[in-house]
Image (cartoon, rainbow, N blue to C red; front, side, top):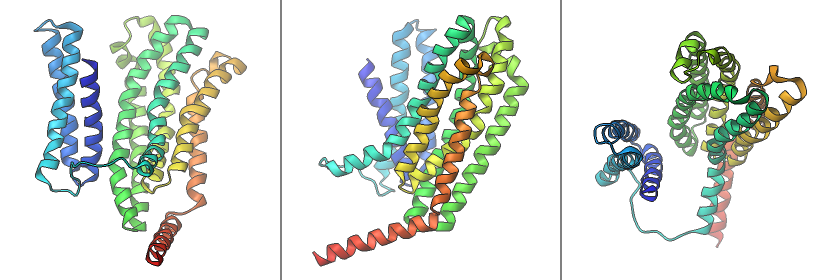
Length: 321
């Protein structure tokens, strides 16, 4: 049961990326919507009316991803884009390039569970099980906030990538600045809403009302880190889109693994539990400074110029051969 679900889930993620970058962002959007809504409905249907329990939930997840794949398949059946499903031979060089380009995204995806895991160890040590319960409620709310930022970055990726491929420097810079502004506004707005409704929203996830004040304090400080995090995500997307995977990788590592894990363990140990909710904010802020410096080292115009020179050199070498 697990293997088919994993296959459909993987196919849905890959298909969504291919369809979105091949000129059909609307279909990619509906593919995700159909998969999510059908999963929710089928979960209810199999678990409650049909009384199928965990098995029903697993079947619902698989069917939801299958429906998403079917929606995305229309893009290839209509043959409106340039991508086609055909037989291919494995190319080691291309596989290496895919792995290198995918490393920053891999770090992004594992950074959230790693951060939560490290936080759980520290919170359990200093605050006990009650602290874990309070922190769990906060992470549920933050997942929604993080999903918005990733959605914006994924929408920008094909726009920046296509403009970079066409050497349209002004468009690359425009989309980059637009992404920064959008994520900055949305993160500030969502954080403000969370602060306003926090004590009430946390009751949806925490049944013990005595833990709400602790959870609300964690929400205010831990959630504040998602404002610079939203901007860092745009920086990572920008560097990936202009084929600068190294810069994207180092930004991902600094915010997701190195600084986070280091500060989570050291700050409370050195300065007490009053700073237990600050490591993520400090890590994201330092990463933002690091990303800004990387961006200033070389402008988009110079990057495109270097890429043009590389292409000309390759063509000249091929002509000589």
